[in-house]
Image (cartoon, rainbow, N blue to C red; front, top):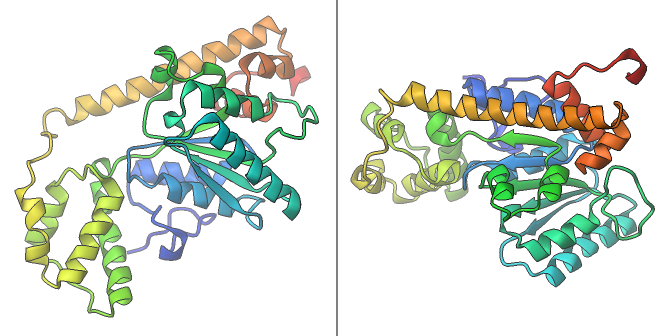
Length: 319
């Protein structure tokens, strides 16, 4: 089975588990290849275990900053002082290496309002102001929550959301890409069998059916743990007992298309809202895109990308 979906991506096991046969994962990988070489801020949205850190590292590796470091900051339980110190440490390291590299903010939704204020003060507002404490690294953030709803509930600063979401990449949960389970499982079994110096287990059709019917609340991370358990125990029947005892997932036959339609509708509504906000800013500034970027509190390059992404037409004088 070929796992390649785009010649621009290295989709081998060494590159990380970002391959897939479904349309959603293929479209995601293609977009990653397109935006990785830019310096646009990226927001990765997905459930726990869906591969957000794998994608953060892939984006860094495909970027022009691949020779510099990717610095990770876990946002859970940070206070403003620790956040400031960790970000400044990343900036100092970049200055010593003569390259800012990439900064990965893992779980950015966990930052309280005080930490959000500190982070916002470090992010460029669209034009370089020459401040020594201003972040120059390529910013990649991840979240398990809908930050648009968090901003509406005033739990997340709207201006910070705009600055970290130059491009939003939504990672599908494993239950929505079950066609990829056999290939992912084969890779995990092969990897852990090699690590433990054991024979790669072979699962029968009944076992594969069980894996396909399971809802995978822990996503790819849970699948890898199951594969490791199968290899370690040496008996797939025994290793899969916990999955057999698990309550069945939500029915998908009758409700599947409707759930999918709601997801599509939600994404479309989000795009329409974003398009309207950008259009209003452009009209208010007489289509001066630099001023519009400042009003929206995003970078100029992020605005250009969003203009193309939302299909807004720009006059020739503005090209």
